[in-house]
Length: 372
Image (cartoon, rainbow, N blue to C red; front, side, top):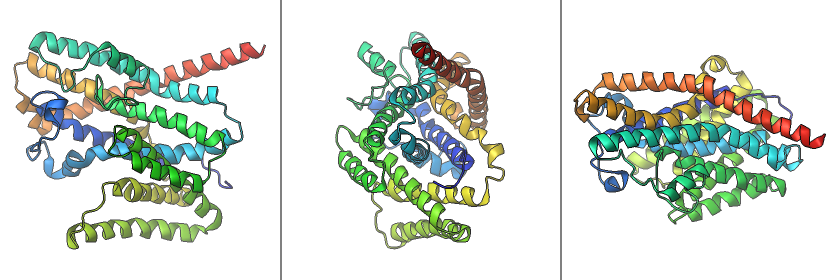
């Protein structure tokens, strides 16, 4: 790795856009007639959602952004950690501390906010919002970030299921690197293993493994291009490869009427987007990306706060005597996003980062005292 890149600002922006896409997808929560399990398999008419003509792709396909999260994680982790873990510059304890300090504090905070908000809703209206499994077992699985390892049931702060998959992927990745399998020819079979798990009781894990290691393979392609191709050819490739894939998929889907496979986004579209963006940023510089990267900084807060905020909005609507029809209004949509982004910014600067720094400093102090 002969090039020097400290941060991919535009990939951070992409992660932020992905988080907002999930929020649009979950706008349907406001119109659920019952719980998540009651609505499984039912067709929901979204044509009356606020500004539907503009945000239709996000209302309809926003769930795919979670697959994009996994693919981005794969690219970034192979870039940041694969060599360091393989060379034993980063040990398991440090690695786990870095990851837990990133995920855990906000996960626990939003988990308890959901519990309080659901309690208020149930004791004022007699129902829970979207999810209704608040058993001790579900709570324990949430606290330990293992709730999607053994069950596909979604509980408490529902969107946080992906954190459980992320934690599993972190462990698999560390093992993958420590036994020096961090090469593209080992990453490719992992994609196939993930594919085989799709459709089984480990479907979420399969999706995570397939997407994560697809991101890893894309990093190896990026790394090879950075070290062997001239700047001019990297730019040409980045500019023309992504449009060709999009045009090709349109021809297949809408002209030839050939249904694209379910994993097309994980293995073609998302990796291509990541490769295109990373090549352009590495070759041309980040431009205004540095000034917009806050969208990525707050993406984790955006992702974890949006469901608790939905419950709070429902409580507020009930309190003022309005019906759920208010959520068809563009004004409500705008208000929700303004509040969500404000909370996310405050959460990032005054909770996420301080807690990360505190936990990492505690680990450093413990390590130093152990050495002494």
